[in-house]
Length: 194
Ligand code: GTP
Ligand code: MG
Image (cartoon, rainbow, N blue to C red; front, side, top):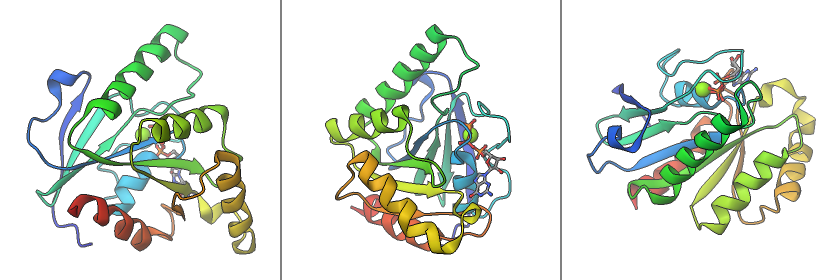
């Protein structure tokens, strides 16, 4: 996939601001700091179009990035971020849930999980919720550059077993080395084209 154009269309704080074109959308989901914004940047070859940070909680709005004039990546605030109040967290969760469960343009959710750790309760809840709502999803296991090559398959299996993700594709990925990038594009293009 050759990305020639990538632009931020809007950072939305509510449904009224969502773009009203009919372009297919790919949304990211995952804990704060797992690498959602870094994933987008690597996929589109832009160092910092999507803002990243070593501190969790960087992305706080739904950010719509238009790619090659043909589809959108939607960067989503991370879950499991302790520094916001419980009410804020709930409001936030509802906002994202509503987007994912009602957005007609949404074709697939990329759920990101840090390959180093067993999925958290939030990760499991998110995966279950996506499955229950029959939202197509793929799993991207991030930061694969941080574990030895020989351990990758073991970690992938752990994620698969822990989520009960039998039929779901799990792609080990690194925003540092671009490992998994072609595989991720291949998988995503299948959803965008159909
Ligand atoms: P929020 O916006 O807070 O929800 O976080 P996010 O999921 O968008 O994470 P972000 O992309 O901002 O990355 C968080 C930190 O992890 C940054 O310091 C990134 O440089 C780092 N990071 C992301 N992906 C990778 C990766 O594949 N490998 C390594 N080594 N570091 C990564
Ligand atoms: Mg982010």
